[in-house]
Amino acid sequence: MIKRVIPLGAIFFFFVLVMLNGYAFGASAEENYQFYCAQCHGVKGKGDGPNATETQPVSPRDHTNTKEMKKLTDEDIINVIKSGGAATSKSTLMPPFGKTLTEKEIQELKDYLRKLCKC
Amino acid sequence: MKERGLVLWGFIFMLCMLAYSGRVDAGVAEGKKIFESKKCNDCHYTQGPAREKTIKDQLSKKGPELWYAGSKFKEGFLEKWLQDPKPIRPMKYYSLTEKNKGDHPKLSGKDAKEVAAFLMSLKSKDVKAGVIKAKKSARARIVFEKKLACYGCHLVKKGRKIVGGLTGPSLVDAGERLNPDWIYAYLVKPKVFKPVKDMPVYVGIVGDKEMKMLASYIATFKQKKKKK
Image (cartoon, helix red, strand yellow):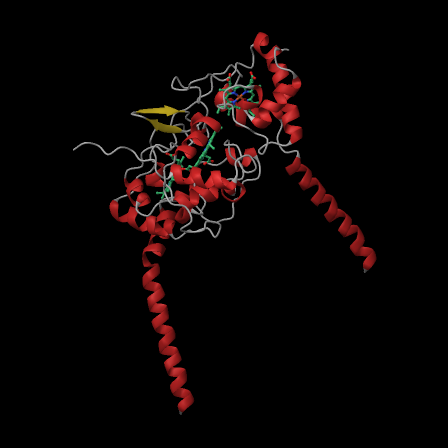
């Protein structure tokens, strides 16, 4: 009896692990960018998402602008995603995502931005 | 003999209870039937808890979840809105490119009343009643506008103008639409109501006192009355 239960338990445990994995590391950087960032920064990162209306006091950063984006260190980018615009003395219109995205997802978004700006 | 009398009285009592509960639920049951026959469930689910786990889950939805509608909306709002469903979200649901065309299904006055009764019966145990009262304050305004710039994704009134972003539901008339207690619950328990959404989680960034102030502040937002 017990001999039969152990392999079953192991299989069950394996599935639980696979599922947990799915939740913890869920979304790709592309998926996260399109879901959270594109609404302001635009689907191609040009700073032209639907929230960038003419009534807003500041325009979202154009993430494809190599010259501007080059000024930011990796740490700046990570901090600004985590804590919002206030972290780099920019507008608070850039919201804080530190409680929405995991550490790993933020790291991957930083890499994604580096690709967008080619810098 | 005595026992039989007791049983009889018990039976009559139960019948009365049944009749009474039946009467109370009449609008609700009728509303539920209309909700189903009009295919409202094609786009809305009415049974909690929240089902969305991933971004894909959220993006596959055709309309907002309604399983806590009775806690979310102000008494009277739904009956009016269902007859004249003006856009709440400026953009088409979770679209970044298309505007909301204002083509939501409309109900007749009678149907709207019954469907509203059904939806208002869907309460969430995670919303405590009577905690938050609508209240303006200078502190709340600073938090809402300056510190967190909530208008980044929400339309709000600023003086006479309407300003802000378009991906969130308009907050211009939030005080007429939303139950203040739900606003607070939504802000402090984001995982209960909308576990996956494009609004950031502010728990741990904003303290409880400020959350309460924000909820009270939003609850004062009203569309200006039109001049007669």
